[in-house]
Image 1 (cartoon, rainbow, N blue to C red):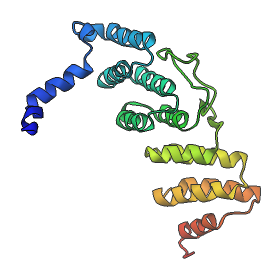
Image 2 (image 1 turned 90 degrees about the horizontal axis):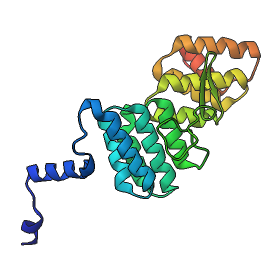
Image 3 (image 1 turned 60 degrees about the vertical axis):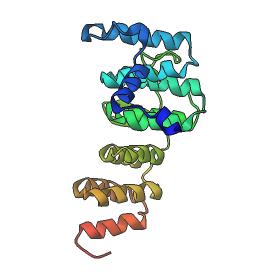
Image 4 (image 1 turned 90 degrees about the vertical axis):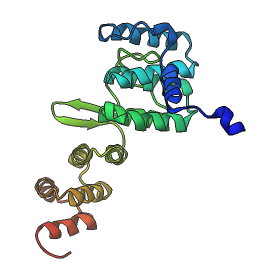
Length: 231
């Protein structure tokens, strides 16, 4: 008897889900020409009621549905800031669901911010930051990547999101500054081996040889493997 009371048809279930994600006050603002107005209205609701989780979720959903990458990052960032360490499962699911619409650097920053409190990096869409983007976690410049966090942790984040090339670049850049770090050598050797990146390995190997630093066992074994010898 109780099951019959709570059962709904697939169509009713779909309508209920759509009703949840759509703000009734914004129902008339859905054309492509009015996306900016809808986004501004959803963002305004969050600004007026920062603790309204539904308002946050509707903003995130809207940005995701319309592939508004910068606004989506800002919406997720504001969720993390407002929750202030709470709702870890929720934020983890949100990031996992939205990662296909975000760039790797934004994903890394959101994950690091969720894991350890730090000054957030905002953009013009974010509400609870200064809106100035750019000097920590990852700074891209003409020379490559300048890391201001532990390179192994940053590389691990890239690997988690299948950004293996970015992970190798982070570790290669770290070795240019600290070639004696065997832990970075080992991590980079594992990436070179798994991706069969012989050319990149040889370039880095020549640099390390010129620096006359001690090589990790994994690095030496990979050198033998790429040379066609059994380590």
